[in-house]
Image (cartoon, rainbow, N blue to C red; front, top):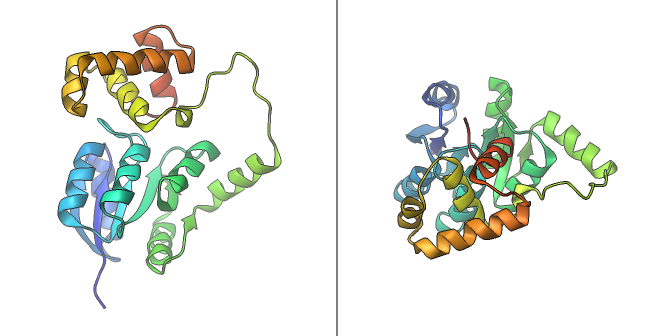
Length: 216
């Protein structure tokens, strides 16, 4: 039987090295990258059977990377391995094409179980996340008028711009990276501030870090 080809993405090289050791019994690791844009490029080049990715990654977060990957490499199965276990992130991950979701505290045995499950064409969700999802379904706390909108309420392009702003990229650099005009970047920034009720770059940066789109 042909061993699955695996591509892995995480912004920490030590995590990648550890993950590689854990999955090598289950498949052949054909690539490792440390940011979301590199992941999209390598996925198109390598056409792996299985892709591990995180939500918080530089240049392009995992949710928006996954949205692109489901269109560009539809045969690749996506498993999120993240520190984020909140129902909002898990729900969004499956919406953009994930077939598996693990937290970084998961055991090596669970990791292998997840790989085997998704390769059989089934979905896998770590038990602790499943429990949280059930709790969120049963309880719907109302949000007060001062609550900011969740990050998944933004359009994908807005999330990309927000992340790059939080990572300290200039307006000109963002425009070049996304192949859009400077005026378009400024338009997106204004709309993001309106949507989130935020009023400065510092507030945008703090929000992006809190929501997991950028790291310190």
